[in-house]
Amino acid sequence: MQLYNTLSAEERAQLIDEAGKERLTLSFYAYAKIEDPKKFRNELFIAWNALDALGRIYVAHEGINAQMSVPADQFKAFRDTLEFYDFMKGIRLNVAVEQDDHSFLKLTIKVRHKIVADGLNDETFDVTNKGIHLKAQEFNNLLEDPNTIVVDFRNHYESEVGHFEGAITPDVENFRESLPIINEQLQDFKEDKNLLMYCTGGIRCEKASAYFKHQGFKNVFQLEGGIIEYTRQIKEENIESKFIGKNFVFDHRLGERITDDIISQCHQCGKPCDNHTNCANDACHLLFIQCDECKATMENTCSTECLEIIHLPREEQVALRKGLQVGNKVFRKGKSEALKFKNSGDLSTQTLAKATTVETTDIRQKIKVKKVLIGKGEHYYSKSKIAQFLIENKELSIGDKVLISGPTTGEKEITITEIFANGGPCEMAKVGDQITFELPFKVRLSDKLYKIIEPSEKA
Image 1: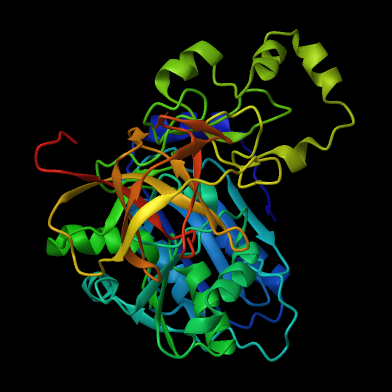
Image 2: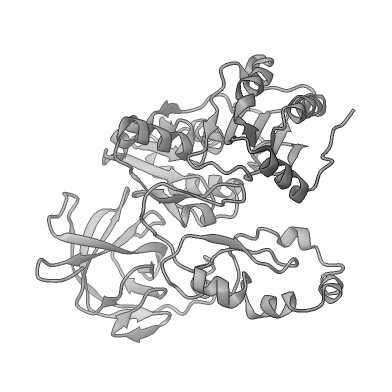
């Protein structure tokens, strides 16, 4: 009985090309009580291997989480294999916006402790007591409510290239890190705020919404089917997209474009870019954003050290990584000192200085002047009342008017009279600079920094 792959990725890709058949990339999940995950895993492998279904699937006592590639002409047969199990009858399959016959080249089904690692050991936590599901238009409507806080429950490398307008985007490596961070930030809003959340396909928010209900939050909502289903609905129903940029996906494509906005930058040169790559050094495999020019110059590597290594003889490369826990380094998700234009979130070595601001006013009503998004909030030092922002788009000069906006902060306008960039005073902050200045109100991760453009100015 075959319960493992017998073909390499290269051999599988060749067979797919020779077959010339359309394939569908899709994802789905279900929380359920599975008594014997190993037996369940083996049953799925036998059924799906017979259909030439490929993908990466996790099963656990709490359910199943799958990202897959299925031959289009076997789609009905594939759905029938799901319908065999009561808890997957009528399950929603999130079909990808962009199709790629090579999105997955192996069938990998792993038994895990949990399908979404959450770091929780609370036996009273009920993952099925979830928040209210919202369709695309309902989600957009609640986004417009000033009483709403929206949270992105994906990781930093996902939200960096695309997210919903005004969302809190935690600088985290994994889902379990985000739960306590968001819970701490939102303790004051359990009773009176709408807590609106989203992720790629819905599985993380399904658990997060149940967690926050368990923590006592009263008004908890989640985007049904995640960004993938949202994108399908806005296209079919001609709904305005409140999501900007690209949706990160976990197959070799690494992203599906939702809007033309490019909200991130090349981690090596700072040029606007939202294309991820994996470092070509097999002892590194760092996931980072790299533009075409840097890709050509650096030959798909993240640093000069890795560039040198890939030109060594193969035997020397293998010898260099011998004994290293290389597997733990794979997909370190862009946290590296070698990446000049990627903010690591580590502020321990930052030198902070005060700058003064004037004319602080609350302007929660929409302003009529033009505003250009130039940066995002990174930190607020409560004792010294110093705010830190990362400049991601355009320069900021002394005398500029800026708008600080966020779901909790509201909208506040100030005039910059001093700028401290990367710890020192300057006349103008450039793209990639970390700036600090004194503010009488708290800055949050969800806050955005806009430059206000007067009618006579050019954006």
